[in-house]
Image (cartoon, rainbow over all chains, first blue to last red; front, side, top):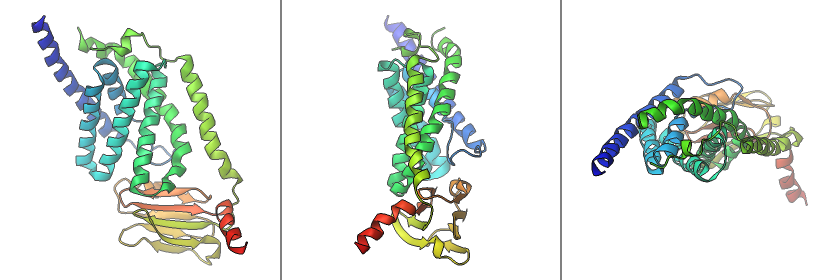
Length: 171
Length: 135
């Protein structure tokens, strides 16, 4: 029993490393995409939420929070302190909310994705208010509206990636 | 491992999800509707840096377009009688520039790296203050 446990622990560490790398790559990819016209500026899909949502649901909250931390560390190094703080606040809060939704809320994958996107936007909004002024709140309705397609997209992608990811956790 | 995803056989779309979307749409609408009711005359451009107000400019009193430079930054704001536009900034993401023209009270362009906010107030916003003075 002890042997198989230590094996799975090592596997867990390796898998978390892979997930963290995936989150960082998705964040990078997202930054390279041009912004979509007509949408409020600064809006992103939040592709790395796919990874933290999977991790929160399958491996556990601590690992998912660690991945959010690592991802923000990368953003901090490449894009500076402001972007790093925004990424950190959004990443940690959305991970927490998605974990709660997965555990206690009877939402579908799309619903969990939307809750994650909402939490991400809300945390970033408050961080932006702290950094500048309450005028940032004028973005609120647009962020709420954009959370719907963004969250639905992340939830849907995860739903279809889930069988593949689960096969990696336990063959 | 506490497998929440597969243990419950989570569906892609639950009934609650649709309810959530409807609630969100209503909340967003409730935020947006008052903007169409505010009067668009006597617009004021408020420029803030590091959370403090740097300048307030009455747009309808401008006779010709002016370019405003926010002190200690490289943010450039174009102001004319009906709108305010962030025309240039030295930041990497250029979110403020891409925001484009602000024409309605309540709209704002934000440059997070430079900690600059340009926002429009006016219409209903300025009236209570005016009444306070005259009354």
